[in-house]
Length: 143
Image (cartoon, rainbow, N blue to C red):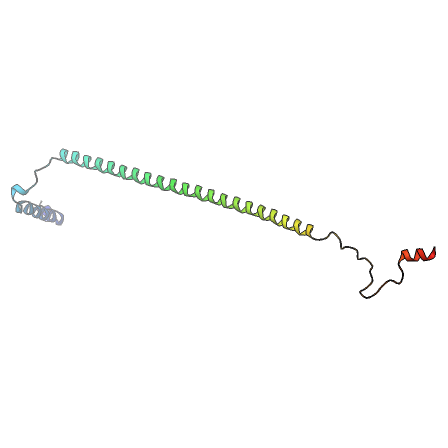
């Protein structure tokens, strides 16, 4: 038994108990917390854990709601962007058809403005030249 008293672990434990008792006694009795039974401590701990679980669930629900809201906002923005892109493509197609029609009209107008084929030139005498005899005069002279 004398060996057990000299066990280092037992000696350390005894020192811890002495320090703990000294600390406890250094606080005035009215400032010390009321002693709590293990059953009461477990009940309090259980209530704390339940409260922590409820708070964590509320935080998770709040985060889920924020994530869902952000996802809906992103989807809304994507729909708006897609609609604007479709409008832009539609406007480009419309302007392309309008330009094509205007080009066709201008080309047709240009074609109508040009003579179909060059007019045949009459054979005329140059300035200062005269026919010697007209055809009518020739016929009269013959007959």
